[in-house]
Every structure is written in C-alpha cells, then in structure tokens.
Amino acid sequence: MTSLFNIIFYILIFLSVYVQVFFFVTFLENRKKIVIRNGKIKLGFYPSVTIAVPCWNEEKTVEKTVQSLLNLNYPKDKIKIFLLDDGSTDGTWDVINRFTEYSNIKIFKKENGGKYTALNLALENIETDFFGGLDADSFADPEALVRIMSYFEKDPETMAVAPSVIVSASKNIIKNAQRAEYNMGVYFKKMLCFLGAINVTPGPMTIFRKKVFDDLGGYRHGHNTEDMEIAYRMQKNNYKIEHCNDAYIYTNTPGTIRKLYRQRLRWIYGFINNTIDYKNVLFKKRYGNFAMFTLPMGVVSILAVGYLFVRIVYNLGHFLYFKIIQLKIIGFDFSIKNFSPDPFFIDTQFFIFLIISIYLLVIFAIVFGRRMTEGKSGLSLDILYFFPVFGLTAPFWILKAIFNTFLHRKPDWR
Amino acid sequence: MNNSIDWKKYLIVFLITLGLFFTAIYLSNYFGDKKINQLESIQDKIAIDILSSETQFSLLSELSCKNISDSVFSSELEELGNKLEWSQENLGATEEVSYLKKYYALLQIKDYLLTKKISARCGTKSAFILYFYTTAENCSLCEQESLVLSALRTEYPELRVYSFDYSTDLSAITSMLQIYKIKDTVLPALVIDDNVLTGFHPIDELKKRVQESFKLQEKKPALPI
Image (cartoon, each protein chain N blue to C red):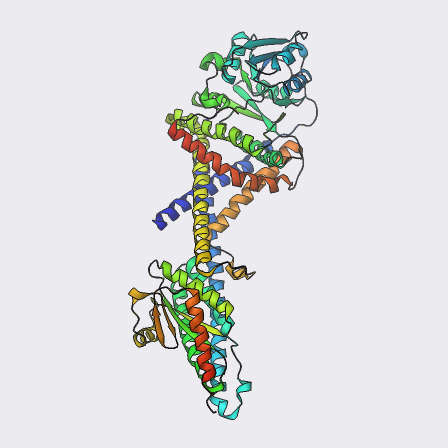
C-alpha cells in the first residue's frame, strides 16, 4: 500500500516538474517576443469599444472603476460605457446614476440574475464591433485599452485580448501574497498565450470582437466563472486569444483568508466543472496546446496539491499520535532531544531535490512576472507571504471544490 | 488560429524532466553514500576505542582503576545508533545499512562485555539493559519500549542500554537470544541483571529495577586487581 502511494507521489512530482519545465522552455523560446511598452502609443485606426461594468453591491468601488474608464487614453467618442446594476441592495444604483450626464455612459437596472446575465444584457444593446467587461472592483490603467486594441490592429485573426490583472501594493499580508501570485499569473498567462492555450479571459477588461458572441452566443453561467467558460468555448472553436502583458488592470483582492477562500473555491470549482463540461476537448490534437497542456496541467496541479496535503495531514497525524503515546508512557518531556544541527539528518531523498527545482521555477515565474508588471527585478517580500499563505490555504479550497463537485454543491459568489 | 502542437517540444521537455529526475537520484545517492561513509568512519573510531580499552584492560594489572577511560565511546555508540536508525528509515534497508547494523551490534556486545568487566573489577557505578526489538514487522510495543528506554537513559547517565534488532542476521545475536531464551513472539524483550522481561514494561517498573541494579553493585566489593 505504501509503495502504491509512493508511486502516485512520484508520478505527480514528475508531472509537476514537467509542467514547470514546459513553461520555462516556452519562456526561453519566446523571451525576445515579450514587449513592454512604457510610453503612449498611437493606433492607425481607433475602433469603437463598449465596456460593460456589471455591478452587484459595489457602491464603494464602482465610482473609481468608472473614473478609470473615463481616464482611458482613447478617443472619448469611441468608448461606450454600460453600467449595469444587477439587482444591488446597497447604494450602487444611486452611485451609477451620478454618471447619467456623460453622453457615452448608459445605465441599466435589472433583477439580480448573476454577472453573466448582466453581461448578456449589455451584449443585447451594443452597437460596436468590440466589447469587454470590467468588474466593478477593478480599475484600468489609462494606457490599457489602447495597448489592447493594438493587438487587434496587428492581427485580424485575434478574437480576444486579455490584459495583465495585477494587485496594488498594500499593507495587508493576504493582499501582498496575492500580489506575488498575480505577478506569477501574468508570466504564466503570457506563456500560455505563446502556446495559444489561454483558458481564462478575465472579467477585468478582456476585450472581444463582437463576432465571438455573434458566432458562439452570449455568456453562460459557467459555474459562476463565465470568464472561464467563454475562453473554453473560444478554444473549442479555435478562436485566437492573445495576452497584452503591458495593459494593466488593477483589481481589488480579498483582504481576509475567509474572503480569499470563498473566491478561490469559486474559481477552482469553476475550473473543475468547466473542464468536466468540456471533457471531450481533453487530449484532442485539433484543440492544440489547450487540450494537450493547459487542461491536463490544471488537473495535475489540483491532484498534486490535494495529494500532497493529504500526505502532510497523514504525517502530521502520525506525528501527533506518536507524541500522545510518548506523553502517555513517559509523561511530559521538555527536553529537545531530537533537535540536532547535525547535517547528517538533512533529508536527501531524491524527491526533495525535485521539489526544490519546482520551487525555484515558481520563484522565477514570480520574479519575471514582477518584472513584466512593475518593471522591477529581484525578489520582493511578497514571495515570503505567498508561500505560507497559499501553501496553508490552497489545499483547503481545492479539496472543498473537489468535495463540492462530487456533491453537486455550488459555491456562492462571495 | 495557431493550434498546431510542437511535439518535439513535448519530447524535449520530457527528456529534460527525465534528466532532472536522474540528477535528483544521483544527488540523493551521492549524499546517501556520504552518510554511509560517515557512519563507517564513526564505527571505525568506536572499534579503535574499544580495542584501546580492551588493551588498557589487559594492562590493568600494571595500572590502577583510575586510569581506565570510562564510557569514552558510550555517547558515540548512542549517536551511531540514532544515525543508523534514521538511515534505515530514510535511506532504505540497503545492504550497506544492514551491514553497518551488524557491525554496530558487534560493537555493542563488545562494549557490554568490556564495561561489565571494568565495572566488576573497578566498582564503577553502572547498570546494563539488553534490549531486543524487531523492525521486520510492525511492533508498536517495541516503539513504546524504545521511548521508555530513551527517557530512562536520560535520567540515569550510568545506565547503558544495548539495543539489538531481532531480525539482524548475526550469529552473535543468535547466541544471545539462545542464552536468554528469547523468541520473536515475545518482543520487545529486556535483560536486566540476567532477568529476562518480555513484552512492554512501563518506566516506573524499570526505574525500580535500575535502582536495584545500582544497589546490588554497591553491595558487591570491587574485585582485587
């Protein structure tokens, strides 16, 4: 039995190393193609874009979100802004009513039906060839839209362009841990972009050609992750998704473990269930790296973290049992007999070196992601928060998401 | 849409990952070998110490008891025991480890015989426990008894505990098992002052026995040299 567990463990480690090496090789192949523009750019032609802001009880942040859209470096007559109140019970409606004087802003109110229904209401009313959403807790950098639109100008086959979603500096440890994680996410997204295998077109300001929705239909519930489901659908239909790494969208991240847990439970549950819905895509050559790499990689990550956690809990349980026995038979022992600085007792089993190599590649991803988003090189303190915060909490939402999937129990939005 | 798959890349990444795996295995073996070498050098040192003490002992007729080095190697023996136990768990029960375990068992027996003689002749305060356990099967009582003995050793520095793995294939151990008539069905087993105790024995009981053993020694006069 032990050897079976070990074999599973070694296979998962092999696959985890494979995934990280795959990303790193992709980076080495494409590193010269990563362009980071610092100044303002101009387009030959500025197409009209509609940006929808679905709001559900966002009275605190929506004003800043709309202001960031009004400050975009893009011709004002080419941006249409839709503010959609999805049945808020707070003062959101009053806040968005303050923007009625702007000729390019339209406001809508509807009964609460979920974010995807608000986005579909926007889609029913658009008159432009480009469409995007912006979550009401996120804020666009002034250069974000023009940089995104430059990708459409460059390649008429591009159907959607995702921005880099990042977290502003904060004094909150949970938020700073997420900052490191979002930076890492930017690096991974760029690599997936080179592979043509992006699996999420984030709610914060991914811009689509309207044709996507004309051809494939509107947003779906997608297990509360409609931005993932639409990306899956696009991949299934071979629609090209790009990543504009220098289009920055700042998002407001959960500041407590509890809120983070709920958000991630929703994301992981969404990943598992969308992948189940699109299981026919898995390992089919015609769907490219999305089917051969992105989806299997996600499954491997979930299994590896889940398995590792069970293993750690088992070892911890074993250790506690041993301590209880010790307490029972020889009483309280205050001496630290087992502590020895002797390097002899350092574990040098082979998988330890592989785990170290995985950590090094993850650290590289965070460091390079930070360079892409903040223009800074080197290690940041955020890495120190990232490993303990996510190491201790991620297994819980992953296991809960698996558990909920088995029980068909859907997580709440917040 | 570029949905072509670069199979060559998948293969190259596979080979790199395989390379990392073998490098990790190589590193693990390299450090494992270093640890084995370290164990061997500790054992060699202990062997020399024992030989030296034996020689000293043979010369006792010309020396006084004051000159006999007392317990110089007992702490090293304990350290070696801990390291061997750790190696068996973490490096696996390899041939090298089982060879070292045999060597270790022999060193313990030699140390036991010698210290017993010195104690008898010079009247040094000491007590001895021979402890037989098994690693061949899951013996939870053995694990518990080991804990008791570690605690006991901390409390009585003069107490010497010699642990023998029942499953070690060594004639010297087999002889001891025959002498004390110990079978694998009664493990853990302890020998204190030639009394054989089988099964688990709590710390309080063993404390009494160790104290009695010390008293017995005090009553016995030191043998003339």
